[in-house]
Image 1 (cartoon, rainbow, N blue to C red):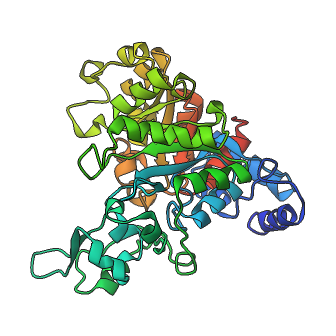
Image 2: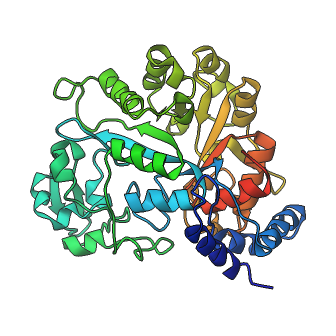
Length: 409
């Protein structure tokens, strides 16, 4: 029998050769199957291992809405680039994210933040470094290396001159090259060194539409005062929706997101067809919220529902806690479910080494996360106990495999 590393590669070749299209097949590669090998023995591992056997026997996996490409597939590809989006779609991400911000000439582009060009692109190695709000300054003594470069300081034509890179910066760097060359050991520059094609929001819509994927654009908080050149925050929120209307994308294929509740409420009131699937990204983790104490949820889950919010998306750790050595649902998750809110979790495979507790995204369950395969224990709880409708991942093959195995949408 072929190994479960070799078989998916053969499936992927068949997929490339046959006119199936991304709506019909997904290629997951060896990583999801490697994670199964890393699991603790038990019923869940047995179930997933049975799915591995089916793949080895030639089963073709299909894209799933449960599998959401977080910025594309940035575990190995520069985020929010054409290459990253294509990789996510090929791995079966049924929904792919474009974080939306704007340029100096008010054109919408895909970047995680309006002021991250110094860590996500090669701008510091180009003549456009002169446009940076804060030019590169080297580390010296206790002073860290720093820079700050904004999309709002570039025209779209200038933005197009840049290449994407893996999001990283070396705070101890004394020169630009070493500042830019800081990719974490659990990521890779293997693909970043070859290509990193930046995209406008409209271009991302056209690409994802052609790949058969659906859309979850996030309206990013501006790093410049608003209104900007006459564009208000509501103009900005409307502009995002207008791009989907212009492209003829049905509202049912779009899950617009924002950390700003006012953006979500704007869509609910002024674009109700799109507002029906608007997602409030819950950033209250930096405030006085206790995920195990419902009295600290302001607004409450029921109040959010009464405002017309249907989708709530917190980081992974807000949905779970540890009890008796196991991962269990948090009060936050139970309250949201009781209020009838649909939950989306973010972001899997983003914190690095799970053998060391998993980092920030697992902070409420660090004590029981001990190996890479524990990612499936968490996914199983999120999907089957809490009932999340989707999970963001930096490597969507993992969530695609799981969704196929559990027969999730």
